[in-house]
Length: 410
Image (tube, rainbow, N blue to C red; front, side):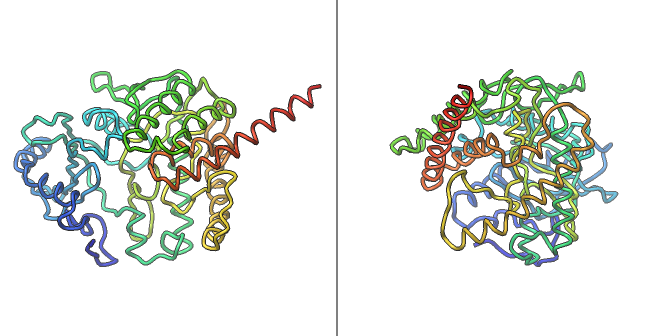
């Protein structure tokens, strides 16, 4: 069972180490074993070298996620960095990441080095190789004193659907919308993940994290490879026996019909953007953005998604769940969806580029279709079956719209 920290604990003070997971569990064992094999002395020496030989030490607490371990470094003058170390590849990552660890970390570093107004930690040193003196791939970056918004709201006892008070919640969502607008303002000619060339101090689009393929010059090429990856992953998880196995193929067909800006320009997006990768202070001001491996140049409908884990959940199109709890949740979510859409639209007014605005396509037909691709990745039977029903409804509507359109032309 997860240990509870005092509600006032912020930043590294709230880190629980391996106790994030149940003792004896696979993830708990992996964290403790990894902590043991890392050469922390070698890593502190590297950190010291990048600050002119200034001595430093690691704090006792550390943070553990599914893919990384993070530990705070404190220098003699009081400056703090964090060391973020990548776990070795494991089976649970295979469906999410087709690229090897070094490429995943390269994407993260590229995203953090991009020059924007977004509060990201400055990168000081990194090694993508596992065979180094430390014993793991790592990134050394600035420490930002803040806690993950999704976790901090729980520790503070926030009401359902809120991050802090009503006023703090609105401010948090305003800042979240501003960040999404900034990211989406960047345009690229190809679809793929973002990479950084240290020699030229420039960025380029390359193979994408999830499929391991790309870059692509059209959204249809990308969706074909994404569909193949999802189906291959479903077979690996023994899901091919159910009718819902074909959901990605149907969604791919629908995206060929309703997708927009199919040949670009393509916009930058963090597909994992949400309250679980935003650091906040005690007042729920966003002080940092973390976890950048989901950043890519993508089609409009991929970009036009609401932040995840932020009480902005959309139901599958055409599916009406009559259960009272679901009806109540949908009713409570509707005004939050509209509020966030309005916030994003206001910030996009500063973007003078041509093209459709992202806010105008939130919850659009094409965005909802792509939402199904994301949902399918969960590999949950009830989720896939729900989206199978949604796919059939969207197919029916598409055929009817086509018939009506042809009749009007007669």
